[in-house]
Length: 308
Image (cartoon, rainbow, N blue to C red; front, side):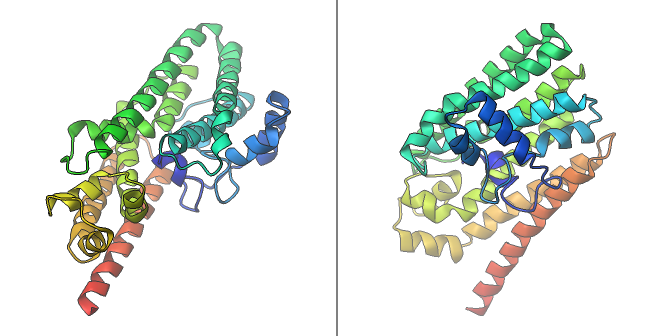
């Protein structure tokens, strides 16, 4: 599942307080797709009712000092919510995790809706940006599709050791936020900061690794052999049954080992954020919360093992 799309607006640990703009989203969906707007509205929102990624455009614009007219930022916000929903739905369809089989029929609506909003902003700012915009979108969507295909191939081989390209597969499944950053940079005539891109890329990776820790049982039952599960299998040189896997995860040290990798990785990201020439307090706070949350779970697991 796409890490960015899944986590940021379904809990209270978003980089900045969620800025829903729910009424604006629903109004725009009715304008674009009057016959399907009600269901699209549901698909665009997470479990808490907030639009997917609704705060991301504001976060990047503020943190990186990108100046946009309010009406342009609103269109980008609406477009990005539809794009994030597209990524989430496409990812669920690829993993056969759709809540309703017919939800995949709305993928074209979400993608064309997002492109409509981004195109209108480019037309208003500078029509010459349309070609770079379309190139940008094609590149990221192709990378996303390739990542999903590659990850499915890797996860179908349960005894395969971790592959270097798996990093790019994990990040590619969550690259909507990277597309957004490049889009904002394009519209504001600012070159993307490679350091910010690097931080967001690794953040997507570590958040997905953390998700795999929490989803190990569901992943096992659905035959989605993540790098975490394959690491557990490798210790036995075989696909073990669920009770054996549970023992490996909870008692065999696999959970502690992977948690330490994630915690140390997030700590390294905090150092990178501190080294930036501008302050990104919201991102720093978000990464800190994720690190502390994983550490708290790890501490509870270790305590439970020692008391057993």
